[in-house]
Length: 258
Image (cartoon, one colour):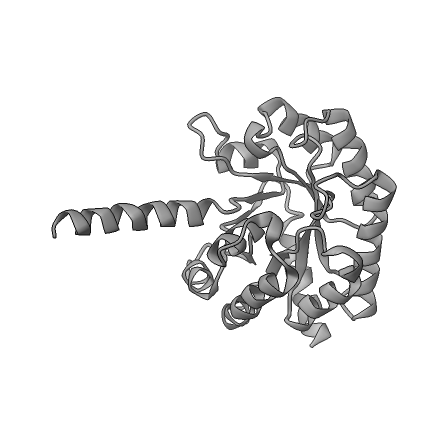
């Protein structure tokens, strides 16, 4: 099992280290959404979004516990295996002191990589940089000890989302990569990440940058981000929001005809 999972991790890692050809992840949140996305010929990997999983379970992202997250992964992982797609999971901050135990349980399901946040869910405060770096090292070391040395860590940095400066993002991101992260996910929340910031981040991180695809009219397109050298693009809960809006509109149209 470990060798199979490590092969999936190697595939995932190769997908996010291609110059000028980013991995685009249309994040899923349950078995049905995973099935729909996995069937698409251009889907190269599956990825979950914790916010969307929480919403589907009737929770806020902050209240999503590991067992609820794990239940969604258990439903999605067979789809990834069926279609031969590597699966990466949003495990938020790793859920406290159970970081090693939790990543082990994900690996047992064939998960090839994770998102790991640098904000503690319980407090909403960013971890000191030394702590955040050590947590990445712990995660990478645990995966290697379980036979998955190529496990992919997408280290999320929330400095901009919390009103911090780009210089701190650059410092943290470089240390996260040195600690074993494959990419750095710079999350800007509602403020987003500007073109100028993306350009500098790509340069400083040698391309190993993940950005969230925004829905705003002036947002950078996947093609623009690819041309700028971004390694990984994700949509987060974007597809769920679109799907729920479409469902609402259709339901309203049906009810109007009654």
